[in-house]
Length: 104
Image (cartoon, rainbow, N blue to C red; front, side, top):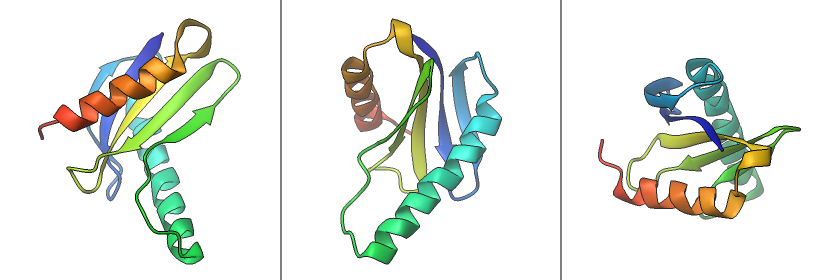
């Protein structure tokens, strides 16, 4: 059910690598950089400590997973899934394992 994925530097919005397609991953990565920044700022304003594990955006026919990387500050993994053909739990688990083994 995966449509596309990319690794993004959310400080600049620059996409560092992509796989798949079905949408403009460059544009999506840059736009979702703003989502990550906004969430971090909101957490800071509210005094919420800790790290973002992942952000899930649910659309009518797609799921979007945004996972900031713990080992590479400033980067996140972005995955777009076809909702009807994917398993959210397995996808989140796979993204976590990719994040743990990511070398940049």
